[in-house]
Length: 174
Length: 356
Ligand code: SF4
Ligand code: SF4
Image (cartoon, rainbow over all chains, first blue to last red; front, side):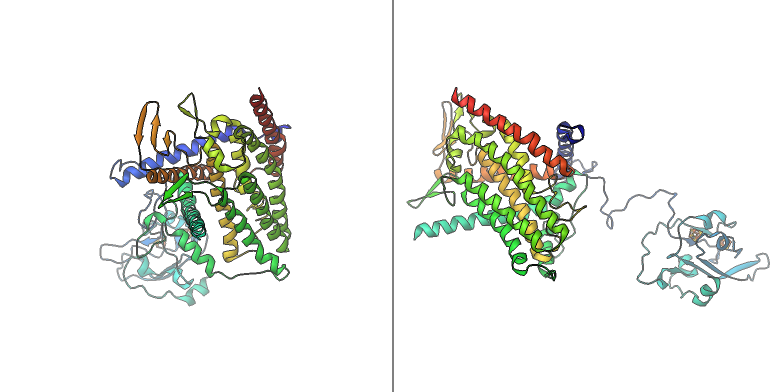
């Protein structure tokens, strides 16, 4: 028999022993769970996703949010740093004057197109005001249309009742 | 008249058991593989919120397959294309006719043999049906008029031929030892004991034969690691053009053949319906005696047979979910250069021992 024709019978038996070992170990734990025993052990390494969630690492980059000042207005000063660095060009900011003379500008509109965002986190890194963060822990933002993938400032500030984003402005910036 | 009714009853009972075991296997396939791989497995199909550990998934499968479009390629041979899945299922089901699932049951003055048909060539009959079953696959591949399906059908044919020889040569050892081709008599012979207490099961008489039969049998069921006729990742197989329930029938055939193989392994090598030390009138062990109602004895025997078959199904699923697929040359090398010489050696040694 040529070498490459050989059937590794020893390895086959070893493999069967391994999978059978896992089967019996996990089965014992599952059956014990039925009787309310050995609850601290797990019979599987997977998570039953919608009901049971994986613990996130604190460094995980999830959906963006804009942080707020004490009075509820955005901390963002519309410096455009994030819009400039964004490799996906998916941040659209309209700057306006801030009523407080000590603060130069504020964003009138702040939209992020999540359908384009690559979740690099550069916007967070570059912000001088700690005004944008990616620590909401929100992972489910799938939508049925591209329009719905666009986050407006209200949504980013985590307020209720968000507005429609400004399409005309987006075309202009694109 | 009563004979016909009894036979029909036995057929109904066997089909009922086979199809229910089939259902359980469809569930077990998902769940056992999951538990082996540290997962939970399919558990989302529910009826009114009752999930029952995913037990309803096979029902969902069936509904899906029945509701799907019944597609037929334009260039297919219509008659053969339609007949092929029926042939495959039919020949895998008729094999159960000669499997004895219990001794005799005396009920209301009637002695019922718990076996649909006690053919005196039962063993040959099962092999004949298994060989005929391959027509379903070859015809499916040919009638689809698809190169890949044809390749799958041809692979099924060549694989069957290669491994059937080993299978046949292996069981000849048992035939020499038991001096019979009737499966029922074989099981009866396995009720004897070595030294009065070790059950004379086929696996103790023919350990090498058991191993070879197991491997060849898995090759016959065409499941991983011998699923070259299917070969999902390369040719998809003889059923590539089939959809809906016609495909479902091919899938069923694989599972029915798994059950048939388990039943054959149990019958030939693990004492069939025999429970060690349990005889028609109760337990015997040395001087110990424990009388048991004969109807209960029959029930215990049928249950023991079912349990043994189930254990083999478990083992076959374990193998199916552990090993990767063989390469085609490995398959042929294993069959012709390894298994066939060993089975002939096994046969020669058995013959010598019996002769001396
Ligand atoms: S995470 Fe990266 S791609 Fe997404 S908005 Fe921020 S800078 Fe742009
Ligand atoms: S970098 Fe920060 S402060 Fe500047 S525009 Fe972006 S979010 Fe606002």
